[in-house]
Length: 133
Image (tube, rainbow, N blue to C red; front, side):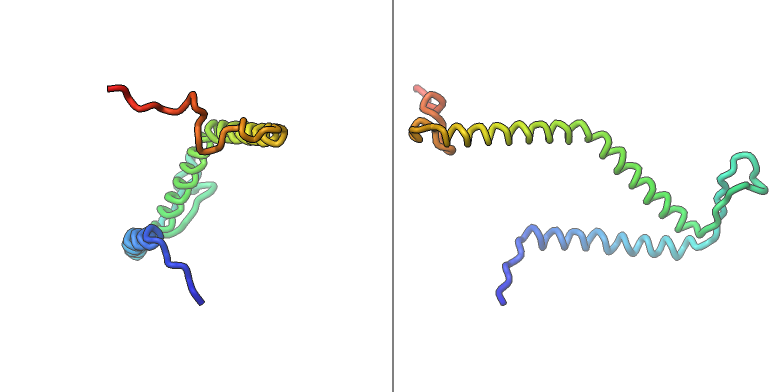
């Protein structure tokens, strides 16, 4: 059973992730242990003594829920801001595919293959010449 060797980038990425995630997990666990007191979050702005709706939970859970909600809201906002670029990329990909199919059909219909320039070599008129000294 031969396995392909892992690339250096993959191993480095795992090491960096471990160096970041392990201390982050330790900090989150310490934060949760230190902030176990129960808090009541009132969702009623008119009555603070007898709120119509309230939520009672540990402080660390409230902060973690708010942090996760902030990450989700930020991700959605970034995704919405990038909609224009995704639309442009889809349009350009469609145009490139149309051009590829057009080139392929022209190559098929061409009787003389020598007239069609090769993919890696530019036509003579586009080749760079050595500078004149």
